[in-house]
Image (tube, rainbow, N blue to C red):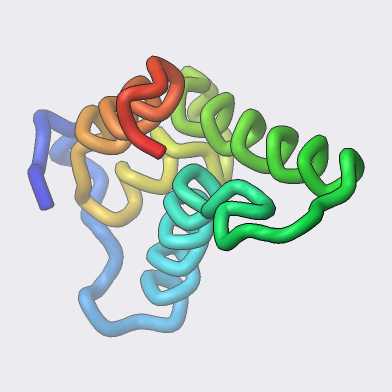
Length: 102
């Protein structure tokens, strides 16, 4: 994972702590939400509700990745706590938004 210039007065969480595990899982869920398969990608009939729900989840994930909020559990806060650079994650969201990835 890339590291970027961060406030050196803030120490990232210990590598093996329950808090770090939680934050990594939040980030992993956001990535999963961003890149989940569209309903019906495997074939078969799907409902409009399911498609709308999928689009809402992906849209919220994109919004979360692109938000400049620094509050608890925002991307910027999470990356600061984990010692990660947020730019690569933002790049993923921008790729998804542009339609380059599916």
